[in-house]
Image (cartoon, rainbow, N blue to C red; front, side):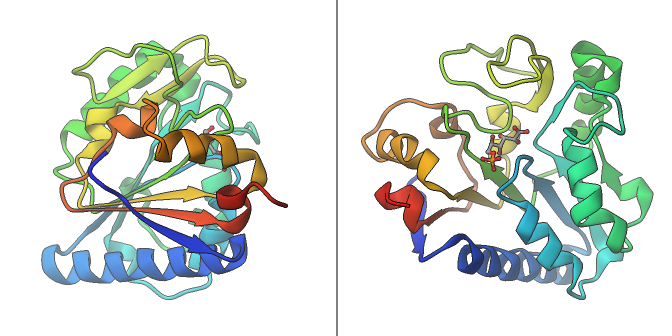
Amino acid sequence: FTKPVWQLFDNATVLAEQATQDILNAAESAISQRGAFHLVLAGGTTPKVIYRLLAKTDSDWQHWHVYLGDERCLSPDDAERNSVMASECLLNDVSIPDSQVHFIPSELGSDAAAAAYDKVLQNVGQFDMVLLGMGEDGHTASLFPGHIYPEGPLALPVLNAPKPPPERVSLSSACLSNNDQILILITGQSKHDRVLDWISGVDMPITNITTNNQASVYCDKEAWTGDA
Ligand code: 6PG
């Protein structure tokens, strides 16, 4: 990873407030410079509070284009879908045009969904911002430690993911790396061992993702110290 800047926060609430402000600032700057803001959303639990805070703010939503970093192969209305979480916490409450909300059609199965999403991703230049989390087992998006993923495709079918459901679609490291700004969100005691791995140089999926400009890791005190 190209030297991310680590920033530590007392708790997950202040971390979320800062991340929300950063996303709004990135949107404002991208929209004023290029007329559009291309954002990759993270799944999982950590970003929910950020998405809910964003939903209460005013942004130039007409110019937002959103993508998902990964998706689980489940029916479209399954509560475990990242698209459902993103809709409930953010997208249902803001006026981003439907044609600019790019969900991964994982109900088609991982192969067909990855192929379809690859075509969508080919039309994106650089992402303005990529949000990512990290699982307790060190996975990020749906790239899992110890697994080998093909280089080349922008979106990958993932089978045998150790975290359920086993079938998923993930953006590749190369695709996620094509960004102006990346923000990695790590909260909670259960992530502490992976934080130690990362700072001591262990090779993990996150260490294969880079940035064209700016990389930040926002970490709360629990994840940093391992104390609840
Ligand atoms: C997913 C996520 C995944 C997530 C981490 C952290 O769909 O599983 O995109 O990569 O970011 O698992 O998840 P938590 O925030 O729930 O710990």
